[in-house]
Amino acid sequence: MKLLAIALVSLFTVTSATWFTDFTEAKKAALEKHQYILLNFSGSDWCGPCIRLHKEIFDSEAFTSFANEQLVLVNADFPRLKKNQLPKAQEQQNEKLADTYNSAGHFPYTVLLNADGKIIKAWDGFPKESAEAFTNEVKQAIDAGN
View (cartoon, rainbow, N blue to C red):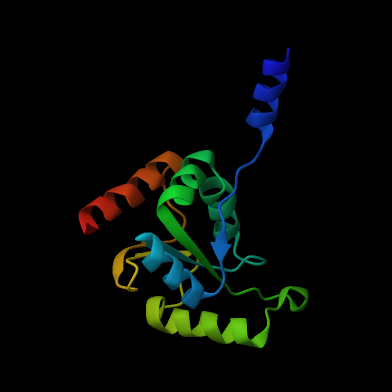
């Protein structure tokens, strides 16, 4: 009975990945851990595909278990609603990241970077594949970059 209870709790426990908002800290962590950075540009309160990407791909068990072991995640958010506005320093940092990695201003836009900030691969828009397939694509890009 105890085993069944533990199994049910683990089944319904949502694992989530840790997302950095400070790119400098994320880069430092990636260098220390010898990991890649996955940088996601999103509009958390206005961009439907961005919201879906986080819910369906980034919050999936397949992605989070891989990301927690292999990636440093960074979210560059661009909310529009006044109640969700970011501190000025965060806005400026996100704008700088957009200038460097997303100059076209696409949302969602996801970039895989090495620890030095060099682009390995980019995904424009919501992936037309499952969370597992997207995760495998990230794995393949990392393997090709090594």
